[in-house]
Image (cartoon, rainbow, N blue to C red; front, side, top):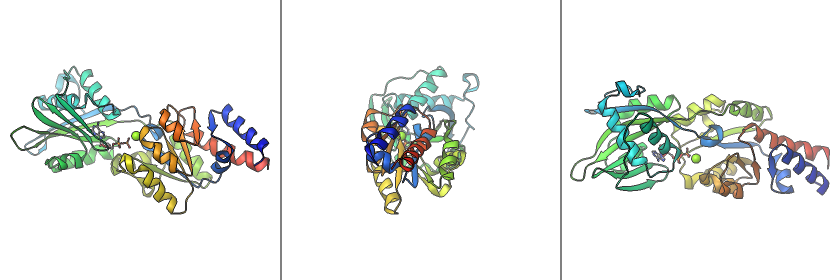
Amino acid sequence: ATPAATMVGTTIGAQHGVLFKGGDVLERAKDVDTVVFDKTGTLTRGEMELTDVVAIRDGAAATDGGQLEPTDADPDESEVLRLAATAERGSEHPLARAIVDGAEARSIEVGDPDDFENVPGHGVRATVDGATVLVGNRKLLRDNGIDPEPAAETMTRLEREGKTAMLVGRVPADGAGELLGVVADADTVKPSARDAVTALRERGIDVMVLTGDNERTARAVAEQVGIDPENVRAEVLPEDKSEAVEAIQDEGRRAMMVGDGVNDAPALAVAYVGCAIGSGTDVAIEAADVTLMRDDPLDVVKAIRISAATLSKIK
Ligand code: ADP
Ligand code: MG
C-alpha cells in the first residue's frame, strides 16, 4: 500500500479504538483466514464467581452443591470452602479470587496458608493447618496421590454447564491423601462475542478457541458463542499456547490470535497477526500487532474490515 493509504487506514482505525502497529500489519490483517480467541477474558468477561461447593463423603458426592446460603450450608461444604479459600489466598488467579471472595461473602473465616505454591495451568498446593491442601484440576490431584474418580460425575455435570470445576484434596502430614470435594467458578460470555463469531464466519473466516481450561467447559462456552466443537483447543498449558498457534499455522492458515493476558504474549507474538484486547496487560500489548482499546470482540471484525477496505480502495 502507499504511505497515504497506510495513513488513512491507521487513522480510521485509531478513531475506532483499533491501533495498528504500522503499515505492514494493516496490510496483513485483511489476509487473516482464521481467528483464534483466547477464552478467559477475551470471549468471556474474565470475572469469575463462585457458584458451587460439593462435599465428597465416603468416596461419593454427598451434597448437590449450588446451595451456598449460609443458613443451609452443609458443615462439610463449609469446611471444603474454607480450606480451598485459605489455600487460594496467595494466588492472583481469577479462579482463586472468586473462591476467596465467595467464601468471605458466606461469612467463612479465611485464614492465611502456612506455605503456598502455584502450579501453573493446574492449580495451587498449600499448607493449611499442618496438612497439604490441593485445589485444581484432575492432574494436580493425581500427581499428589489422590484419585479424583469419586468426583467424576460432579465434575462432568458442572463442566457441561460451562463452569470451571476444581477438586479440593488434602494430604495430612502422616497419612494418605483424601478427596474432600469440588468447588466451581463460572464466568459469563461477553454480550457481543456471538455476533463477532457470526460476522467473522460470514466473511469466510474460521473461528477457533484456545484455552487452558478443560475440554468440556471450553466446548460449552464455544457452543454459547457459535464456535464448532472441532475448533476447540483446550487444556493447553500457558507455555504451550504459542506452539498451539504454530500448529494451527502449520496447516497453512494465516491466524489472528486474540488475547488479553500475560499468558498469551508468546502466542500473540508468533501469530500472523497478534491482537491484544481491552484491558490487556502491557506485556500482551507489547507482543501484539494490533491493540483493541475497548473490550469488545466485535472490534476484531472491525480491524479486519478496516484493513480490507483501506487496501482495496486506495492502492
Ligand atoms: P486459562 O487459559 O483459562 O487462563 P490457566 O492456564 O490459568 O487457564 O489454568 C488452567 C486450569 O488449571 C484451570 O482451568 C483450572 O482447572 C486450573 N487452575 C489454574 N489455576 C488455578 C487456581 N489458582 N486454582 C485452582 N485451579 C487452577
Ligand atoms: Mg488466561
